[in-house]
Image (cartoon, rainbow, N blue to C red):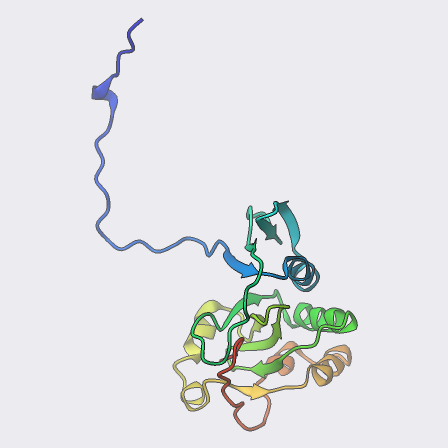
Length: 204
């Protein structure tokens, strides 16, 4: 029997000419010659789990997205040096300062130390390097809304010091456990501006 296509019932469409923006940052993919240490590290630090793994690639996630990270398994790769352009770091936001500090304490007990800890002004950030040296930032927003956080970027304080001030997570944990108010824990500490970094995994 011939199939009759009812073209009259189709509604004609035109593509919107206005620029579209993404609705989600979905995932990123790394190449590595240390695939098992990389899987172990991201599973430990970010509580990821393996969705699927083949000899060529491993997909991991920490939420309902099908994957947040892909790691391609390639032998013989060389680590980037200070003269190599490319990605500086990726960043993950935690729900509150308690979740950030508890993650710092948990992974410290497992032997994972941060590269450095910077209060940027809009965020409180703890930076790590994965087994391949890639920079990974764990952060919490200082302000309750995205609008307030974004507004800080326009302040004289941020323009004068866009990197921020180093902080001691141990001292912040002590303040948290002694019952310090959330606003006090998130307040910008006193101190000189943190130095910029230009090496692989640099934080800015």
